Length: 354
Image (tube, rainbow, N blue to C red):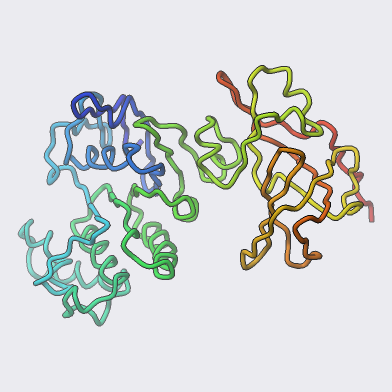
């Protein structure tokens, strides 16, 4: 394991910013540290970088404990959300800064900087100052500068937060491709789910200083291990009386069980459109919202409200329209456990043999 964290904790007086966090990261992986603001993400990042001392626990790089090593001896590259570029230095000088501090030969510095400028798509901008660059270009300079000393770990603290939406989307793709090409182990902090899901090889979800779950974006989305993860990742509706839904009556056997239902768990249609009639319920459309590529539909079944999506290719629904609703599955949870339950009344159709 390239990076290992064991029982990491950080307290500020009586406040526990990070509590007993442990994880491992394979070499070359890009990890998204995801969670709500104030959850402890940046504190973990700063302890890895050596900018904060842990209250308890160990940080190991290649099996070597680095708790007592200063930041400059850990082989860390750090990219901040506000770029932190030197305004009086050109692009070339900013990228070269760390190499000059290490007193490398001028020829070696020139070769390394020029290589990074080409890698990050900044060729032709070498002699410009930060004020003469766009936000996306400034962030690329920050990446190049962090990579220049060839760190063993790249840390990024909400690197796209100060960039507009269109450029942010472009930089996500660029960052993933660049890190795969360089092969550097990287951790980036974000509170943007789409960003983490799109960019990261694995996601670590942090809440109230604790690691809720670690895994691939698909694993976490499909198999949340805690109620917090299920509610935090993706869109969903929590149903208190889930046993009232067709196919989920068995949930009544567990006291206090609730259901969390994602939009993609729900199939809707005009009366008669859905063939599995025994598993459907009749509901009413309350609101519809155009989302560009599809309609978001707000539904009501008695006093239960749900959200799903409907293709633009299908007949447009209107508020007040009756609809048949088939809930394929629900994420169930109570005080002691959580699990996925499939609709017990749903019968898979027979395959068509050609």
